Length: 219
Image 1: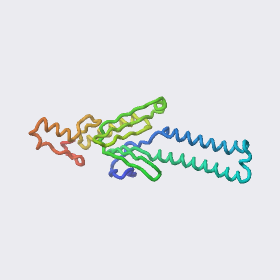
Image 2: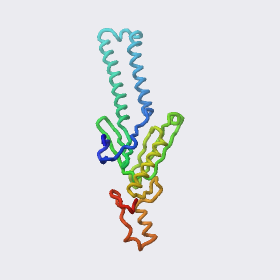
Image 3: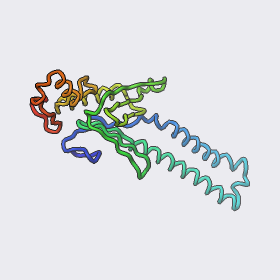
């Protein structure tokens, strides 16, 4: 494993998908930045002809400082939003699903779960723009009280949701886990309880599932 994307990533754990939001997620930010740049260009090339007094004497110094600050802060605004966009990433591995939410240049939140906790995966597209560019929303429903994962502006959402379901199924088969998730089976504990209820005499013979080191009887 050459690159370790999150702290709990294990040796030999392969990355299946690295999901970043589509650039259209930045469309409003780009529109605002372009508008401010246009205002700055108008101030540089048009304002001196409309109000010549603004570019003479001491007013020229103030004028240059204000225009410079306008371009500087707008560039910082655009760069900051691009960094947050680029570093906000969802990672599907052979063992985990992880979402890294870059909340600021020096702050991030990492949420992760093992794949057997996935209950359901759905993809949706709303609007003409999303359909044209094949982007949408992928929702990963989790077991228990764990919060759901929502990937907005996901490129090719149907393909992503299918890949997550396939990876979850392979993971559960490899570890001998019977999950109530997208594989359509029952969770290990639920499966054992149902089996014991149907045949109480078999309770002592029911092996405990070992997720980390599965026995042959769970494959």
